[in-house]
Amino acid sequence: MMIKKDDLTGAEVAELIREHLQGMTLYSPPESIHALNLEKLRQPDITFWSAWEGRELTGMGALKELDSSHGEIKSMRTSSSYLRKGVARRMLQHILGEAMKRGYKRVSLETGSLVAFEPARKLYANFGFEYCEPFADYVEDPNSVFMTKELG
Image (tube, rainbow, N blue to C red; front, top):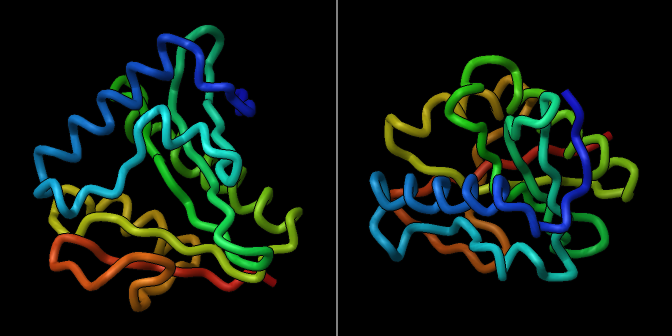
């Protein structure tokens, strides 16, 4: 699998982002959806990566700079045909490596609190993320959980 910095112009990536946003609407009310669309992912404080197996898109992930020492993981998604094949694990390793290169002291994320998000929460916990209070502009929300990891 190859992970590359992506300019968000490819049709495959646009479709996976659309699928990601649509999937969020199945489990969360609109006010609890924090997934970003293409336009918001193109902001200068966000770096976006796509993962590929040959010519097939396997997943995506992004890192948003909150400040010079704190990053936020955004838009983690695995293509449906590559679920449970290690794509999310590899993407998370890549993002954490980039966060360390940037000198971040901490990386945080928001994900859903419902059963559908349990695999994501388990993945993050396996990487040492711990539950925390809302960060940045987030507020308490019964449909969200917040996790953070100190980087050494």
